[in-house]
Length: 123
Image 1 (tube, rainbow, N blue to C red):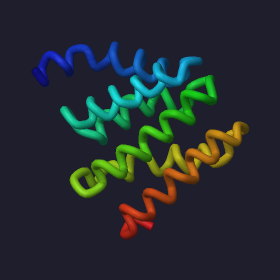
Image 2 (cartoon, one colour):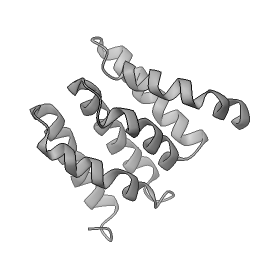
Image 3 (cartoon, rainbow, N blue to C red):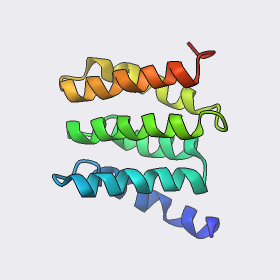
Image 4 (cartoon, helix red, strand yellow):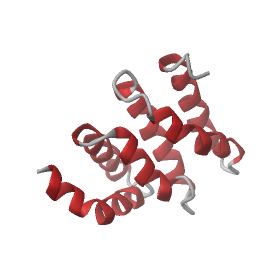
């Protein structure tokens, strides 16, 4: 199953990231759940790195905001088992503190607070 999943990762992950910017909240929620499920079956760090390569710099502020929320959820779920995740998220999270959209900045601040809670050694 994992082998088949990895074959489609390159096409699946950008499409899911794009759905994070959908106008309908249920679609965005489903995209977030799918990313978290992909993190469960593979590695959270790999998914955050691959999805983040699109999401952190995506033109739509909603994608950046929803991806920051997804990363916040992933830290809560996987921080104890996946230590390299903080190295994958901290640089882009800090860059998004300067985002022009206030929703993105608020999501990023929440993500940093969760990082500090679950990963105090890193701070």
